[in-house]
Every structure is written in C-alpha cells, then in structure tokens.
Amino acid sequence: MKFSQLSAFKAIVECQTMTSAANRLHLSQPAVSRLLSNLEEQIGFKLFTRQGNRLILSSDGQAFYIEVEKVFDSLLGLEQAAKLIKTNQFGSINIAAMPLLSNAYLPKVLGRFLQQTPKLKVGLKTYRSEDVLRHAQSQAIDIGFSFVGQGFSGVNYQHIECECVCLLPASSPLAQLAVIDIHDIANQVIIRHEKDSPQNRIDTLLRRYDLGINEQIEVSLASTASALVEQGVGIALTDPFTAVLDSANPLLVMRPLAFSLPFEFDILYPALKPINRHAERFIEQFLLLADELGIELKVGQLLKANH
Image (cartoon, rainbow, N blue to C red):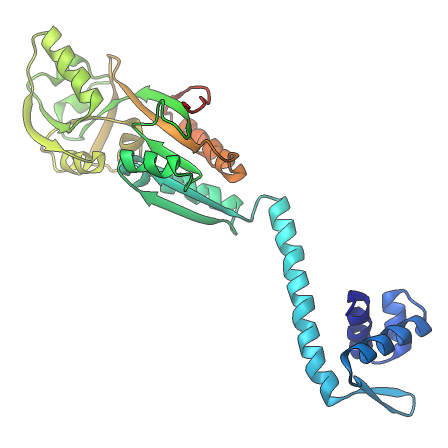
C-alpha cells in the first residue's frame, strides 16, 4: 500500500470527482484512476460505486476512509512535531537539585524557560546533594545542582561562586545600614545552617576578631532560616538566591556584606552522553535571571569527569 494511493483515495473522497482530485494532486485523471484501481486491487474490495458519472463511497470505503484519515492526522502530527523540534519547543529535560535552589529560584528560572518552550516535558526533582550526584553519575538526569560535584567519575561539572548576603528583619536596627560588617553581627542571634561551609568561615572570622554571637538556632534549610528572620527572631547570613527572592517580602531586608563570604556549588552534567540542548538553554536562563536580580556569579569552565 503506497502513500500515493492513499493520497489519491483521500482526494477523490474530499473532492468528489476524479477531475477535481487530479487537479489537487497535480496529476492526470488517468494517473489518479490507476492509483485508485491499484489500491482496490491490493486491499481486495471496492471503495466506490458508480452512479452515472459519479463516484459514491461504498460502506467499506467509508470505513477505510476513517482509517486513512487517522494516518494523515498522524503525519500532520509528525510534521508539527518536527517544527517544534526545529524551534527547540519539543523534547524533555530532567533536572535534579538541592533544596536551596529547587524551592524558589529554579522554579522561577523554569517558568521563564517554559514561556519559550511550552511543549517541553520537564522533570524537576529535589534531592540531597549526595543524591543529586548519584543521579548524575548514573546518567539519569540532564542537569544537577549540588554542593558535592567536583572530581567524581561519570560527571562533568562547572563550579559556581557568588557572595553570601545578610537577610534581616525590616524592623532590625541593622536594616538602617547600607552594608553589614563582621562587627555588626557580634552578639546578634544568628540563624545557623548545619554543616554549612559559609558558617564555618563566619566562625573563623569571629574568632579572628574575638567576637561572639548568639547561637541558639540551627536549621537545615535556607528557606527555614528566611522564615525565622521574617518572624524577627534573628538574622541569617545566607545565599543570594534565597535572599533576593525573599527580600521582596516587606518584612525582610537584604544587605551586602563588607567581608567576603563565598557561596559555592556545582552544576553537574552526565559525562557519558552529550549535553542536552535544552539543558544548555536552561543554564543560559539560570545565568540571565541571576544577572537581572543583581547576583554576581563567577562561572568556572566546564571540567571533565575523573576516570
């Protein structure tokens, strides 16, 4: 069964005459008649009955036409899919990220990204950093965001660095300052992040200047620290992604630090397959949004996996 035969049959049904069908297909009338005859011979039943000079679709022909319509609808769907693929609007992307980024910042990036690629199928899953790395090593994701991405087999990575900021209640006297220095946080209630390298650096600075803080609160998530700051129970030295988005809350204020307190993470890519083209464009949106929000990022080169 040839596509040309099906096209001729469909044209005859829709144009109602052999002559009109031939004109639509840019063929001669004998050529269209021959295609129809060959099709009927192949399928073993008549598609039309003749009433004078008219062709009337038989009951078998009606049933066959319904199936032929499905074939052409599928072809149209393929054609549309090809156009979407060509314009980067079709396909899939699987992202795994630590909670700090997946709670607020990545959904914001994804919302903008999907405005340009509305047909894209997306998975955005939240895991501990160790599990993000494991999914990247098993090649099960297209992008990962993790604290533990460097120097592992099966994973290429880019190191990202930016500066932490201070998130504090709008009612705090420190909110009147343009910049927060290490002496300003002395004796303040600091909402600590457990197992947090910036917190370890803060402790080192405080010891260097012989300063103390109130350490009564320790949390696992930056979003929890932000919620506690909103309640006025303390201040948080935190990543700029959380702080910039949460500082839209009138009860919160974000201030830069006078001292360097790096916040670092890695973007992971599975090393055993090419980088997903949508992943590349997603990272572009990630960096563009950071720039728009005033988050200065130092983006390292893409480094290859250890073997």
